[in-house]
Image (cartoon, rainbow, N blue to C red; front, top):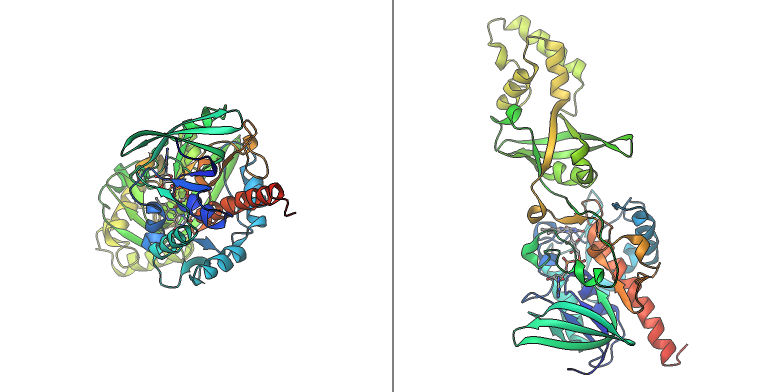
Length: 415
Ligand SMILES: Cc1cc2nc3c(=O)[nH]c(=O)nc-3n(C[C@H](O)[C@H](O)[C@H](O)COP(=O)(O)OP(=O)(O)OC[C@H]3O[C@@H](n4cnc5c(N)ncnc54)[C@H](O)[C@@H]3O)c2cc1C
């Protein structure tokens, strides 16, 4: 048994590392427990390795949750620790940030690993130990202290801590150490778990209509999803790349769109693809009529050649099934596909669902046990694609740090 920690941070991902850089830490008072052999493995892979760590629109953006209340909690935490504070903190750690034309914020060197390194070095500099290959398997409260049981390379070890912060992430991309087993650590104290869904993920769709399109990328397309939620018809539209695959659709537009509806797939989601977002159905129909008049011998299935990708054109004409130029022009602007599922958690970037917002205080402390805090993706809060999830990870951990630092100062009589 080691000496008692003031704070045990479980999980050395984006949330846990950031928290460690924000906490007042006297030697040996704080430690990070990470089940993998490196910290920040997922963080280093974010933004296609470029590290899209926030978004200029984060303060207005909507966050999602499966149970009610997630967006309100996310808004209040992000207002307390907005992007400008993240930027200032990263600059203190020697990292400069820059945004692109979609407001996505990256380190200027465009390397996600630079963010991990900056956080890792800051943690090291503060003398905070990071226990790698240490998977916390049990958390119990004994009196005022938490007893932490972990599997380590040297067998099972136990630690004591006054405060525990669960930064163990969700269930998406388990190759980064997040297989969903860590939810049980919170459930042991009576916390519940909403249903979980993969988000920011490829979609399985009906394949008959698109089986000849495998490998074709359309850029830019306009994709609209429609679904039902609590009896209300909802829709969302995104412009971007779409890639046809043997199971359905992938690409930037699909990833971004998936954040809005993966929880509703079992009740029916439809995609409508506009292959030529710069043109109206009327313009396309007029062009088709002229082409038909000039080239009456052109095989009908080739009529969309020169207007959209040849294969796409043939698939659109086949889906209409008759020589109706009006219907074909409309189908170019609204090619419908039914969503049947997602590619699953292993391929998803984010988990939709988690520990419900109603089970934590506005300072992210458990309402069921004193001294237990929850931050980042473990909570039932997920964001859109574009840096919103990492900003949530950073803001939630910064707010917990503020609370714990305040408590520590009170205990030392400094306030
Ligand atoms: C490929 C990919 C790209 C992404 N790109 C972006 C992007 O560009 N922008 C963006 O905003 N978001 C992005 N995300 C999402 C973002 O990375 C996550 O939302 C964020 O990392 C969540 O932070 P977290 O610290 O809560 O969880 P994680 O980063 O998942 O960290 C959790 C850590 O806890 C550890 N752990 C789990 N259980 C235990 C245990 N029992 N004991 C000890 N340790 C444990 C895990 O090994 C892991 O290191 C991406 C995700 C993926 C997979």
